[in-house]
Length: 227
Length: 227
DNA sequence: ACCTGAACACCGTTCAAGT
DNA sequence: ACCTGAACACCGTTCAAGT
Image (cartoon, protein in one colour):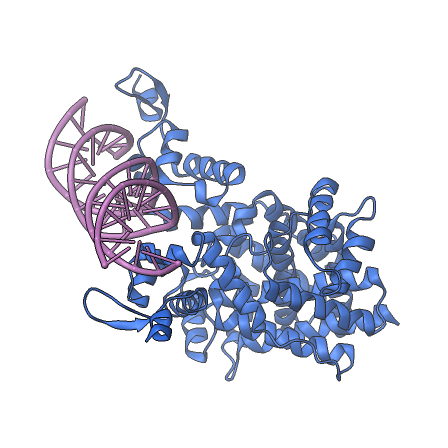
């Protein structure tokens, strides 16, 4: 009885549920942001999802900024760490694809401000392992610094563009293309018209496919610098 | 007298000032966001800056989203267009540096959501000219699509990282380094410690310098694909 | 120790009213 | 036509009070 009291609480309406903790708050917040977007993530709505008043959340999170920082760190902690058994390029390639997948599953993550100012343990672990992979792969310290900056800028930027470009499915691409082709004077934007008609509208086109092309461009260039 | 009435209005407190228009609203909003950040840009505060009640702004802007879209387009319209007299690589390099400068002057621009959903004329002009430069430089349509995606992802992502990494000046870098070195167990994050001590703390270090390294990596790789 | 409910100082936006 | 002022439905967060 005593033990269950530590883990469960009975509210005045008679509903018994497990006690709240930081992890449950973060998980619920991430689910809410994934489903409805960052704007829909309010303390009141998060409380509702957790079956609790908004103010109860503040027992597990300092404030909204702390909540967002925790959410970001959970996303980073979820990215596949570079494998030690792969060569540096394969390992970094895999974790970059995993990185993008994470940002694609959690599109709000790129728009949380100051995600870099107070990195959590998940973010730091992720970064340190990637740096180690590059150093052990024979890259100089200077090139390692350049490489991680170039790779992560690309991954981050691609995820941002992908989020704001509604080209995820063939249907979405067709809608965008239709808007571009009917609303824009082709004479004024000839190259945009060409790209839309002959590239975006091609069957099977996916903007997502562009990701690996650019990634390999960057990785190959880094490999060349290394040698 | 009639003409001046079209351009000036006298408020009840006797202050005469020029009439508001969309451009003045956008300029003031950009100034506010540049100085105090996007969170500080509220309709009420913007009205205050313009010497007008918040609701008066709605005569020139449909809503806050429209305001933000207009601000973004003004920033894009300000980016140097690729020069026709330069070869494609030089032209794209210059406009990419100009692109980053613009995002650096207006850090809030990368955090405006859905900036890609309803691109304005400035954004479209910018994009079309860049596409034309690549096409006329001899890149295939497919490579042009890949190239613009890779370049702009990199520029966008670098600007985002730069914004959240407080490494703009040598002083800022020293502060970050100090925090990393004293707060983090070097045994747990050995590569991060190495990078901090031997790279970030080197005299003259600027994260901004990394930008052109990565940009040339991408541009050289595209040039190689072209040939 | 954990949760609640009222309250405060803000938001974006509406609407009717003024000039 | 343009601007105002009150009002509405929200925010994040405080604080004293409940259990």
